[in-house]
Image (tube, rainbow, N blue to C red; front, side, top):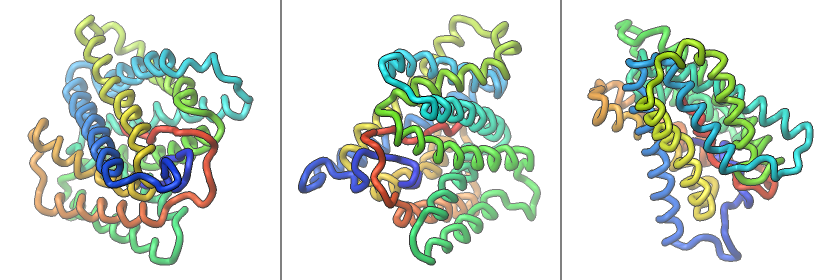
Length: 314
């Protein structure tokens, strides 16, 4: 993910007068990679769950548990809220549910790596628009070439409905990033998520609850709990720690590797063997994300907040 998606206490990412040393940087990089791996493992488990309770049901199960867990951990009742902060958190929750539901529909129709790369166009677009210098306009062209290689429209193999869902998720992820920054600038720690995630769970319940609840067994509820821990609870926690050890640009560059992690997890766990062109396409999207992250750091300081990275990704 681009650096623009991660508001931090200090926009330089330093933890002291001299900044993080090599050891801290290595730790931060490992934590960021562990976070991305958790996200993609959670998505891979979700793909298996789709066969049992459908795409909306899988999204509902994960979001409902995540809402409960973050409500308990974040304890929003201990925060003095303003009307604007509550409104931003509620809007973030609605967008979180929407991006999750759309992305789950995408991964039901597309390989995990392809869906993740297409969705990544959302944060990439935000990074480009908020970046510096005319050179930043190279990255959308590179990403566009990657998308063409991923979807191969000339042979008609990519499911157009799946592509549409993934692109819809990308638009929602862009909105999610902007709302996350707004919430992160107003609310400290996990308090914002303690409002937005329960709202997301309620939205998913309204969409999928009536059809899903009769299908749920104690086993599926436990699977949903484990899934919510894999995504988003554990990744957010890892990223909170990583953000204390890395500069914003370095963190954003690392998170740009997420489509590559999706490709590897899809290959190993789901048996989704990519074509050579698909691998090249994901490489282009990753390269575009790295380039955009280098020019996408925020101009001004965020509030005294360490808001986790927005892994609303489905």
